[in-house]
View 1 (spheres, rainbow, N blue to C red):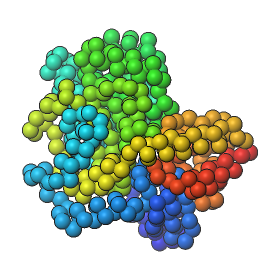
View 2: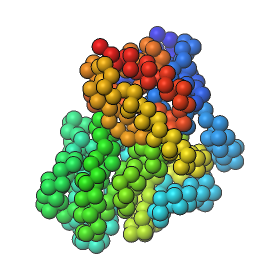
View 3: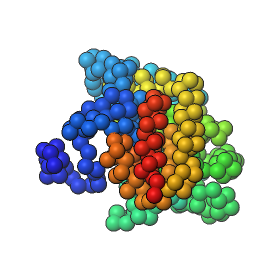
View 4: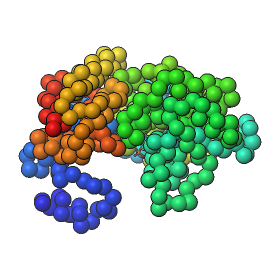
Length: 388
Ligand SMILES: Cc1ncc(COP(=O)(O)O)c(C=O)c1O
């Protein structure tokens, strides 16, 4: 055990089951350990380093801004924040953006907007937000309450009231749930990431959208993990042809720095006024300059390469020895294995590939621009690790 691990174990709160890997540097989809070992990174920091480690364009965008001004507070205007907001609105058709620093915060903002919109329109008792069983929306107490997985709730009661969970892909149960509550908003992930990389069925998503439109209920799409090119479209909802009222995102948009964004459609753009919401670091110019560099490079060419690489992974792993199934969209992939997922991940580490897990699956979230030859090498290692 080196001093990096020793010191961490001694002084850092023990909330993460870390793997015995010490990362000291990286370039693109390759990370280097303190012992000099090379790893192909199939997790990209859980979907954050969209263009890999030390990406030249992102590093120069961030460094230039760092040399100009790193922080000013939201009392003053800075250029990167407005530039990124404009770019997001132009690419999505949304009207306004609130910036924060994480996925949980992006969702907190989304929930506040939905509740304020609905209480103003329908009365103070209209506050319930409907989310899905097996969802994941964050770890603050409110986003934990939104999360539809009981094991995250234990020990943290009382939770924030006003959340109900309904099973994914069950339209009848959804319509029953919304009929039983005064609903302020509905929040869904188009692909449940932490829940096991499970895409929702199109019919279900369309039924949720129809209910929201018919009843003037804000539809929130949580794109924290699925967003920013991950599924082969800029945002996952674009695969389903729907028009959400609120889109929350984080992870990949920051490219490696903390950045959350809550995009607001015309309908809800004016819901939050001065003093209703805020964040000291939200819209930080360095994070936004990096975000601009990321979002401006997610173009049609990159998106079609993501789809091709996704197909390669599905085709190569499906039906292989020890592989029970492959799920997901784009470069957000879950592999159900006969071996325990954690055993497959540990074997991959031994063989120089870093993967993630999600529930009982091996999860892959490589950089969006992972070179094809690197991907081929990594999938070969994963395939062998899955084999019985
Ligand atoms: C769908 C979804 N929402 C919200 C979050 C929380 O994001 P953060 O950890 O940045 O707060 C996550 C994190 O994994 C997520 O996958």
